[in-house]
Length: 151
Image (cartoon, rainbow, N blue to C red; front, side, top):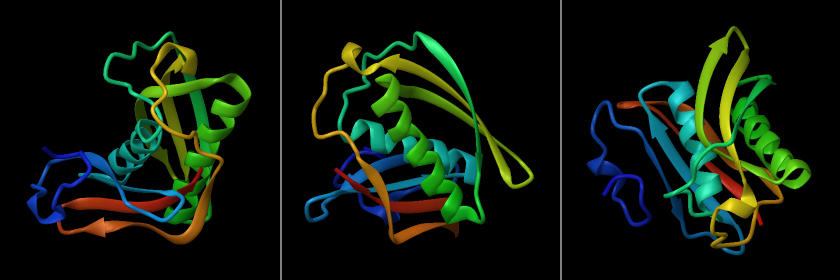
């Protein structure tokens, strides 16, 4: 099934979006994809959250508006994920759904969130994002990205 660990990337179809965790020594590696850069970014966030929390029955209790700036696509990805880590550490909340829109070099993000205590925790929460092997770029099906998350 698309979006789960063990997928073969070649099975991805045009118009599809999703994410998966892939094995990585001591950290978590997230791959995400979508038809647009913004869909790919949203999937990367959900992939990171699902690497440590079960969102299958999660219900949002609030909506947060975030503005993210960066000096390029990879920087936008890292900054967005770092913002999610910050909100987790400071406010104890995780996004269960995101809408990402680009306004020039700025991302306007609408995140429906829930308290971490309301979802089953299945792994170690992230502590940060590594810039090593960070990627966000167009591909034949839309956009894809890969990021290593420090746990």
